[in-house]
Amino acid sequence: MLIRVENLHVSYGQKEVLKGVSLNVEKGQIVSIIGPNGSGKSTLLKTLSRCIKPMKGQVYIENQNIFKMPTKLVAKKMAILPQIKNIPTDITVGELVSYGRYPHLKFGQRLEKKDYETIDWAIERTRLEKFKDRHLMTLSGGEQQRAWLAMSLAQEPEILLLDEPTTFLDISYQLELLELVKELNETLRLTVVMVLHDLNQAARFSDNILVLKDGQIWEYNSPNIILNERLLRDVFRVKGHIYQDEINRCPYFIPCSAK
Image (tube, rainbow, N blue to C red; front, side):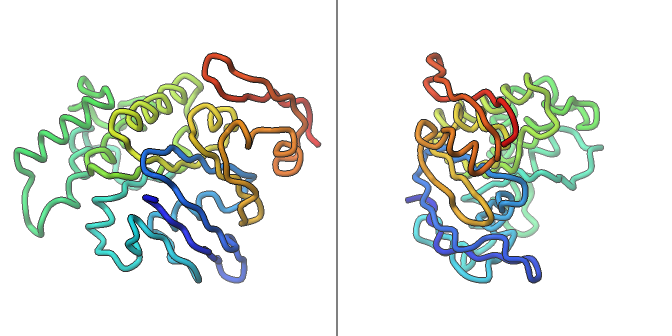
């Protein structure tokens, strides 16, 4: 297993958000985390990335405890694309992507030829060549998301964590981004764990889906097993019909009404 999570318990003050979450993620998989608002999706992702330290439980990457690993080593293994991004938007795409190389630099070391080659490679893989010298604030939402993804790729990680990457994007940019993530997963064997709200997108682009409800795992399985009327009723409190997408070979649902 590339990622192993054992019995995670996470609290915010007196509120316990994760209650004994355990799971395994194999190398090269795409795993989507779904669940109602407040179920602990983003908290789980932040704990996987070491942004939050659990009260109890551990996270391992290739049998190494991430909370005992050097920060730079974790950054070489794992990149996270958060919902909220704090880097000023008055920088260029090329400058943003270059930040992904810092885990590979020693203290005081400057970017070298290999770093610039990796930056150009990341920009090319995310199809941003013509935007390299553009400022982030001049780009559309979808183009900005691709720029942030390029920065993550420049880290050359084995694992990519995405926290609601399609939020605020229209349907065209949502599909473009998820198709790009799937392409990177297949060509680079990049392991992806992402939080999604759209159940149909999770079913289409994931190898496995993790369902959280009230801070606990409701089910963890393949999309064809996960997406069913019981999930809609018991987790999301909606009624709907399940169909089969013959082109993408995955289930999809059409909601009918709130439960």
